[in-house]
Amino acid sequence: QVQLVESGGGLVQAGDSLRLSCAASGRIFSLYKMGWFRQAPGKEREFVAAISRSGSNTRYADSVKGRFTISRVNDKSTVYLQMNILNPGDTAVYYCAAAGDRSAVVSDSPQDYNYWGQGTQVTVSS
Image (cartoon, rainbow, N blue to C red; front, side, top):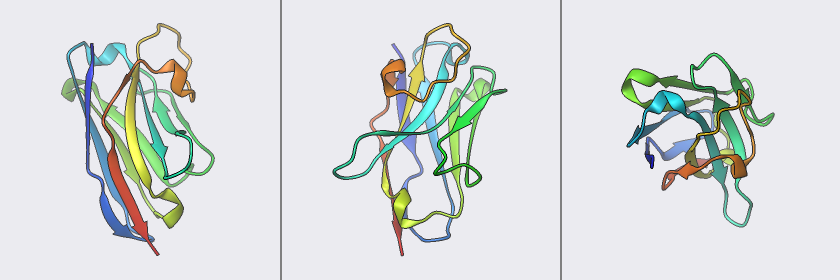
């Protein structure tokens, strides 16, 4: 089992930045690919970003490319999501997730992730 706890959400204005953190415990963190997803009210959960076990490979949704950066520090069992130039369309609950499969593919599908955090709310006002 892997336990994931997100933090860093909040209420910001358009154009501001936030950094989300996700702390993992329970298993060897470096064995898991990590992803960030988000879900806005009335919408399906959508992919935001993902990172490989070593951190050398990343993947982003087109809507956040160039504004968001995913990173990880395996020694701290933590994955981060730096979010810049936020806009109201980024308002959602943000979830981190862990994928334990052995493939090298950094997936954008929620079905490929085994463990999920409880989520942290990000609200961007205009």
